[in-house]
Image 1 (tube, rainbow, N blue to C red):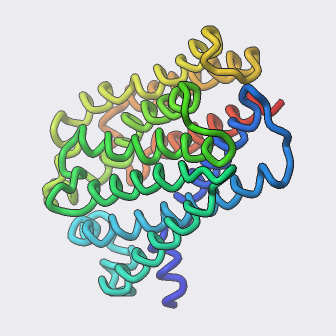
Image 2 (tube, rainbow, N blue to C red):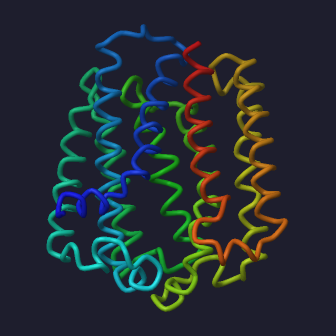
Length: 301
């Protein structure tokens, strides 16, 4: 029973995206100019980093649930902490082990003796702490909440993946990270609509609470479209060095996908606040998966 509760504390479904994101970033770096050979010495740090990213996300999920306990009593009472299946002390132990292991694994991802991955991940760890823990707890403050999700889970994740193969000095890895960061800057709000009651009581002023459901839906819509149009811009200007035709195709597919998700959100925005997991939330994850895989293929083929 405890083992299952610990597994749920890490929220295993959410671990796929960071693992895939890190691996995609590494494969993208392999195919970027100048191209590296696809060999085990090159892939080993990437695979280790993917495990690290999943462990890190599990730790940050647990940390967030510790400080969201009162909110989760209202919104998600079946989770391990509000249901009483785990204690706060047990959750803290889980968090400490996960964060410690994260930093150890990040230090070991050091191609050519470079420890860029470690310092990027260390910065991301600080940001997840700032997001969840008082006195800063940026989760309480609308735009700051979205920013402190988008930077570690979007920008830094991709750049950390790149660092498992190549140095992060240069525009290309940060441009790619920026695309994913801009996406999450708005798309991360999709989880907030159904949580409004608990967030309001817990003092978290998310975008739907501050601006209302309809206006918040319109505000986040550009994040489902604009970032992916930047793929085409990057391919056309040479900032992105993957296969130009595949990058343009990816940009077109993702932009069209984003427009479709905007349509789903905006045709009946009031549904966002009444459905526990609105379809746009599921599409956010699917868009991440498609974009991550698409980038890897556009660079490695």
